[in-house]
Image (cartoon, rainbow, N blue to C red; front, side):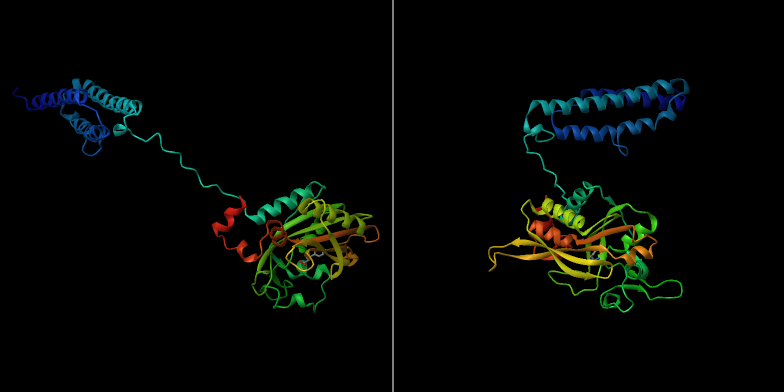
Length: 348
Ligand code: PHE
């Protein structure tokens, strides 16, 4: 016993024995007792097992391995007793010892839903895809050429005015002016630049206009453009597809009309109205415009190297907000951009 090293090794072994005893004998009869037990033995800072591990250097080299193994076994026993006690509490059904109240009703998760604009877009896309249209896209930041010139807008057209268009850069030597596209029609040009007829695409996208914000207009909105170019395409084809589309979205008995109109890039041009029944109105409803359309102007085709004697085409463009508002009975466009969950929740 004169060897001090030997002395402390014995003390460490005695401490281990003592610990093993306590681990085995502690009474675990409540959740609180289990918590205290866990902290007392397993806590990384003050736990007694950690404390013993720190005493390994005191133990003579030939006993170190066994000492380490005993500590690990003690730790495993603590864990096993905790596990066993918890299972016992749950199975006993005694609520004072219950870890969790198993009788509580489950918490339901908040369910997300698609924004009405996305829903309208999906409906529109699905409808045209069933007629063989592909989906194309183009940039929201456009140049004047694609947004206006290639679409046959004359240089002094009022849409080119700063009043209506958000310009990013004024015309310069290298480009004709950079702007936020005011419609999805420039993508007609981009598609025809890259592909020879037959062409059959729809183009969904966001567009921007410098308008006074009110219940019916906003500075940005969404359009879906359509373009079909092939041999022998006629106005009858256009009317047929638009009518089919309106029936899909607004029902078999939808009433619609084509009203002559003007766009620089189509000739002839029309606007399409559908009859919106509203018995509170004196006429029992009113005509609502849903899109512009027409036969692609031969000037546009020729500008892209497409022979307008051989090919013809139709194009249409509709506002997705208008379609969503009609379908879901929304009377103010601004609610579509406010992200008020009380509004959005109604479209699950
Ligand atoms: N681009 C037109 C607009 O925004 C709509 C349109 C598209 C008209 C295609 C005719 C053909 O008003």
